[in-house]
Image 1 (cartoon, one colour):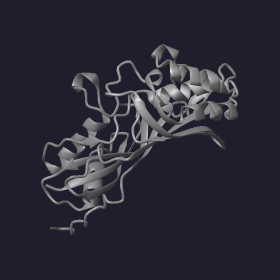
Image 2 (tube, one colour):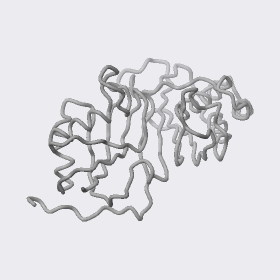
Image 3 (tube, one colour):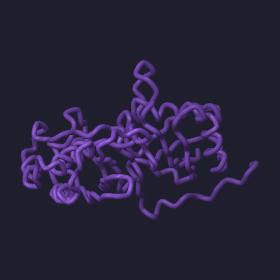
Length: 261
């Protein structure tokens, strides 16, 4: 039973998030992918993702795996799935046949997120559901100073949802960079894994530093409090993007199937 690695892009706005939660809750990215793959392959499938993005969160590099009974060419898996996703805000960017032991979630060694903020006086139009609008100018240097406090191995209880199901709040945050670009402010965060709402909570908190309301010392105090009530603002989901998932080089794709066989 061939296993395929899917690299996926989606606009998170129309969906309840990555994970299926039952028809009464609405459409999920996972559910729509499973439906589309079933349409072309004729078999019920389970699509396992590398990360469970929340409602409204976007992705340019989400990864999932799916098992199919037939050895389809990679191109067919990609294009046939996209054919049945034509009315959805989801696209399979690439499909690759992988060894059976590959797991989109558990084989991953690093996840990369981008959070976009646009600080300008006029409201956003084209980026209204793609970035967090701040009508007040933000001090990027102060934001970076505050972000640096959070890099490393810490107990991130303050910056995780009270509904987070992770067994431990201790995580390694490998990168938290803040930079001004031509289109606004980009916050880039890398780690092996993140807690529920961790990225949005940390970005919202350092934004307070950019507004001059908090200092890096205040962020450090909030971190050490290990108390959700000490968290600053939580950023909205529509400005967050899962951009990439990394795997060890040992997880090389298998040879593609021959067309027509």
